[in-house]
Length: 216
Image (cartoon, rainbow, N blue to C red; front, side, top):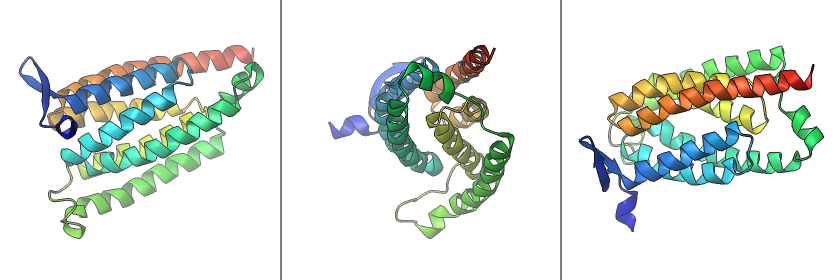
């Protein structure tokens, strides 16, 4: 059973690419959670919780430490989102709760992303020196990994709060993620991010249009 959670335990090979149980199941669950949130379905949150636990194991094993730590935030944010969405289930609350943040709030979130990303980059660049017993190898792509981590943090929180612009953060993260994961050799997840990019674009258009219709 424990071997199934190793990135080196191969489930099957696809065109010469060894697919681990961990990557395959985690990817399917994550994709399912994104499709569910696109449809504004409450089940996105428990499905996402299962996927982030598996992805935390995966990213740690391939030295994407920022991404591994990111999953613990996703776990907390998913629990928060689940509870918050449950409190706004009536039709009137649903229509009112999906909206854009104010211009001031948007500017504040962007500033936080830039500043915190730089701080995380400095930490991740030296994490193998600070904690060699936990992080035996240097972090891969410390700057872009840190940037997408903080942008994902922001996007996840905004999505839990039903903010439409959260999809724009995900679009940026997906574009960068396609490159990083391909270069790290986890091509199935890179392919997943291409699908996620498409869903993020469609999700933004869907939420934006529905919001516009409620204000006509």
